[in-house]
Length: 339
Image (cartoon, rainbow, N blue to C red; front, side, top):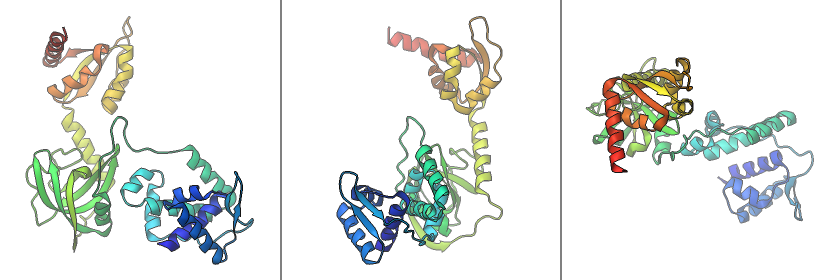
């Protein structure tokens, strides 16, 4: 709405001082011509906007002028919990609300605190997406988030690894993990869970009622008029911790004994994450060549072979014997292929 944009324009000028029309247009996501019209509208309403010409010119408010129109709308207040993660806020459809809320908060702060807030914004940034991986495409995230907020039933078309299914879901919450969005939902009475639905983070088997769905795998979602009752005592954070702990235990069922070079010790946390960090914490003393022995929790043999090969010549598998043989057979086959 134009009124919201005019207020955002006014707060930008108040918080930042002299600002050029192209800078204002980029911030407000409008054309420069629209900024000129909005500046004229502010002036006509009695706001003392001054135009400074020249290379260092731009628009600014008259000295001493401050607006007190800093009340937050419901959507802007809702967006504040994502103040440090603008990318996910944009995914949820709250990008414009977040920007407007931040402007209003800065305008309401005393001068000294407003300056500190700007310094923090300039010096700290949180990027929730993992390295070496593009963020999931999540075209249905905003609609799902609205259903979570409004407590509305979702009719969903979902792609599992075994095939596609249609489900009636009661959306309980959204989780952003390593740049990937997950929906925590209860399967509605209109559709049974069925084999292959996800249950717990990462699609592990487990809870028969509350399940976890990767948002990028939704092919279509429709919001019903019907509402639903949340399970009594359900806590999203507690559910997520329990389900991820269960998944970790289910995946890492084997323990591999390794020798690691000094370089291998540096690579291990990068390749194996928390499991690698824990293994290094319990490592024995280095031998004369600087190599250490560790016990590392790994997945199934086939997956473990691929994971351990990423350590290259910086690691040696000592056991179990079956895993050592499988790795040796794979390395021999590779040597033959590249001979």
